[in-house]
Image 1 (cartoon, one colour):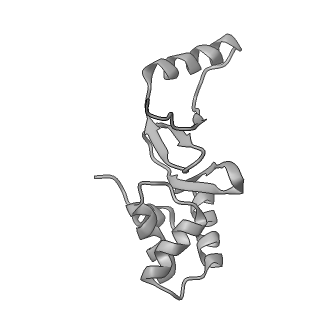
Image 2 (cartoon, helix red, strand yellow):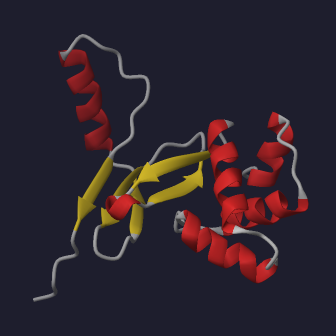
Length: 137
């Protein structure tokens, strides 16, 4: 079973206040990579005393300690997801913000090939594709 964000915090020595614990729990249960505003809306339903500033600081702390990763998104918003050992890429709908996670072996091979072409060994990568959903015909 994968570790929760709360368990990762404990393993990395990140002190969990009650408010950080709520934020960690909500992030662990999220599958849609919420931005800070959405995360704040969710946690404030559980604990209305949590301020948006606390959410910002907590997300930044989790990012700096390698628990969350940040994905820049159009419109100045950034979405956050749990940093996992497994790799996946993202297809992001620019209109709705919907994120589809995927792994494609052909893309993986192509990225390695590009790195090798320029004299590098690929050790990591992040791919984000931005698109607009096609209308049904």
